[in-house]
Image 1 (cartoon, one colour):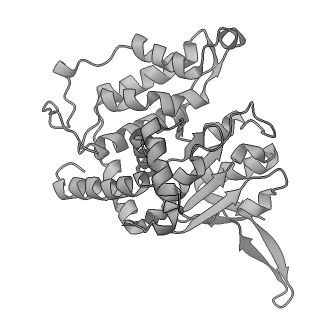
Image 2 (image 1 turned 90 degrees about the horizontal axis):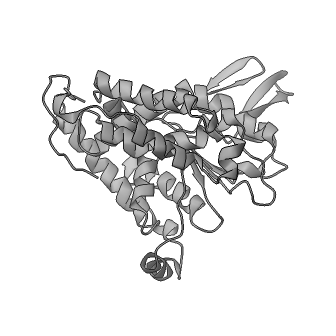
Image 3 (image 1 turned 60 degrees about the vertical axis):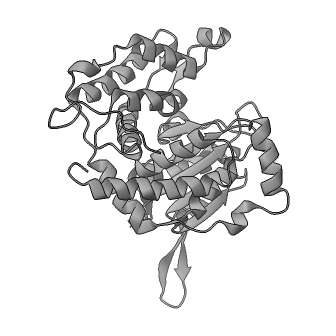
Length: 337
């Protein structure tokens, strides 16, 4: 991305179009829309967790329809089978051989609706796809299309008929976001926009899949100074030694936090990442991977609170003495999306 101002301009322009498109459906939640874009450009997967009726599936659909690429929706239910997701080999009588029939996972954007209403056996069918972007069936490996992103929604685990996602499954999601209830003004606007018909019906793609691939390549070139990389590692290591956490963040979380910070910097029009990018994404990237101790739960200490506490404790690199860019100049105050 360094030395390519046209690429940066293309990224911010395309991202702004997608942002406006999604926000035309999800009123009053610009930070949630921006996080979804950040995860998409960082080649991650997004978990949307909240109570029913706040627009979890609407957000996933709006993001998918704003990009001209293949989209499949999977409604997770207790009777859903792993083969419904990955596919199945069927014996072809004419050719006297088995033929693989791809499942719903073979799409560029996969919407997993209420993922924690399916059994753990079915949930685990996503593990290989989300991490390695492939499906192995009967000894054969089938590559998934690119770009590839899983946008899953889930209800809080306290609700009826839910199965908590296992740690390995949660760890494959780059970020978790909660939409929350809209403000009264946004809810009033929602009545005007959604009262007659769904705004999804008129939503048209504003970006193509090949454009998203170019933007992903641009994000990969964002420079991350050694001090910022060390700051990322220090934050993750702090979760592993925190006395109120019985499970800290994994090395995969370190990589996800770095990639998300690069995408955040690119969306702000920079070709280098700052500690601010890391701090703004630490809670959505790290909190869902952590397991508080029983005592912390009794004290009503959430994983989000513990991450915020770690951010206060871990020293931040001094901005007055750090060569954020590869050529050593100090970062100007750049604002973007």
